[in-house]
Image (cartoon, rainbow, N blue to C red; front, side, top):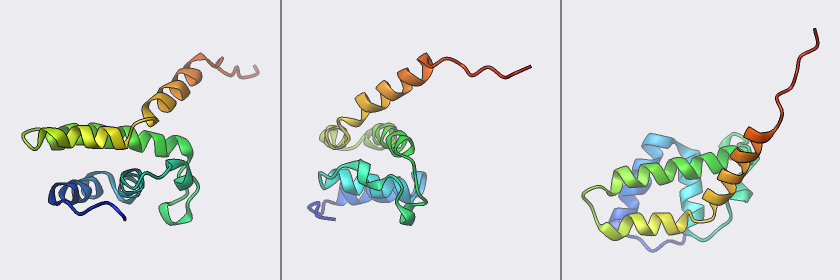
Length: 108
C-alpha cells in the first residue's frame, strides 16, 4: 500500500476489514493507491469475486464511510468518496440494465 500513513485512514481500514472483510479492504487499498478495481475481479486470493461483486463492495465501503465519518474529521468522508469515485456510475448503469432485461419465461 502506497498511501501515506494517517491514523484515521488506518482506523478506517481496520473498520472496513472488520465489518466488510478482506475483499473490501483490498478494494479500499487499491482505490486509495489510485488503482482500478477491475483487476480484483476473478482474483484467486480474494475468492474469485465477480466484477459486479467488486462494484457492490465499493458501494458498501461508501455507506460504511458515512457511518465511520460521523463525528470525526469532516474532510475524511470526502477523501473516501473521491477514492471511490467512478464506481457509482458504473454500478448504477449495470443495475438499471438488469432491471430492463426481460424476465426469462419457463416452458410449460
